[in-house]
Length: 127
Image (cartoon, rainbow, N blue to C red; front, side):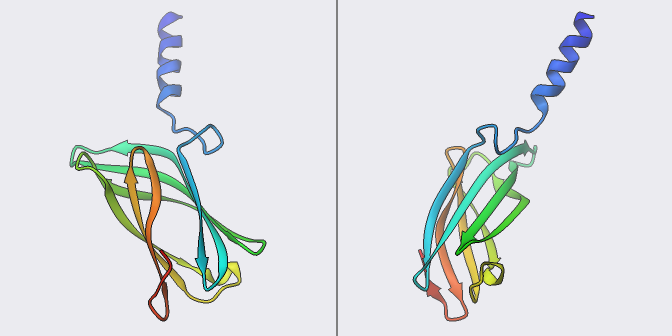
């Protein structure tokens, strides 16, 4: 019986946490052509590979003017070399805005945040 309890506890500990269970989250507001766009990222799970990469399961939220885009994806970062970056593009049509927001996301200190943002068309620097 003790072995079964140990196996169950081990399996439960290996499950990824949900975003509502105090996952590492960041939130910020970007100004896109004068319109505030809230951007949030929560890490809801992770897997390290022997190749020196960390695959993070990320719940992303983008919101503006009563519209919200929510999506969950896997982002792969380089492990052990300090801050690591990925590129993410967000079509703003579902927020009632025109254009695509191209984001450079940085993973450092256990969180993901927006390092820079560019709006196209027009190559407008947002951050």
